Image (cartoon, rainbow, N blue to C red; front, side, top):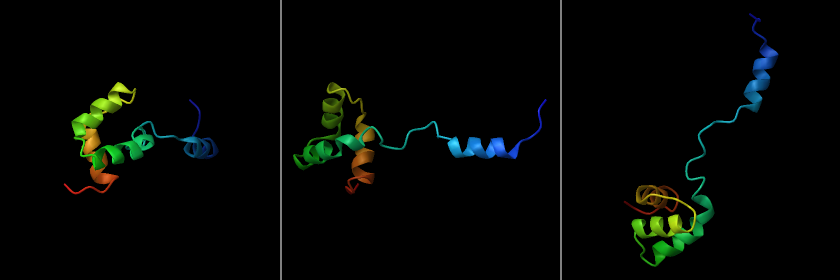
Length: 75
């Protein structure tokens, strides 16, 4: 068994990338589209369905949370 090597561990820490993607990473490119659809009074379900049809799978819940947290919509 090898001994603890601080240099190797520090290098591993520097190169560490979290496995979980940043929240809303997939939806951020569609922010303007989502904003425009909400301005047209589209429902969360409608937005999720439209994005899913265009190769960006999303749930209505994910769209709702995105609109509240990213777009600043009130609950």
